[in-house]
Image (tube, rainbow, N blue to C red):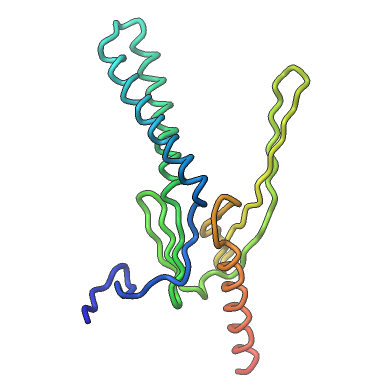
Length: 171
């Protein structure tokens, strides 16, 4: 049995569950990533071939589209893996590891978004966002409705905190 460690977790250990984008949202993010990358490449090439009067606009537009591309990649790679006593949160270039006991609380909040079109039409949308906090009250990570298995981590964090408080009461 090979005992290589992969970020302080045995490589053979399978996660209990994974919080990641739902399948439909993952497909949407892939399509958006391809669209934003192709726009970035197209407008980037145009900016180098065009004259100086449009070059500033093309480079600016290329930069904005590239930011959307990175944002889409960030959403697509955001995930949380729950192991026996660890939670590994990864997002694009970062990977953080927490003990399950480090997650002190979670908060579910409905965020509403309003868009005014200027002609009297107003549209609204909402998302239920679950935010996880450490013992100092600092935000660790958050997930919306587009992610699977969030409620499992909420339940596990509450059960762990309940068992910690029961152990403190016994001592």
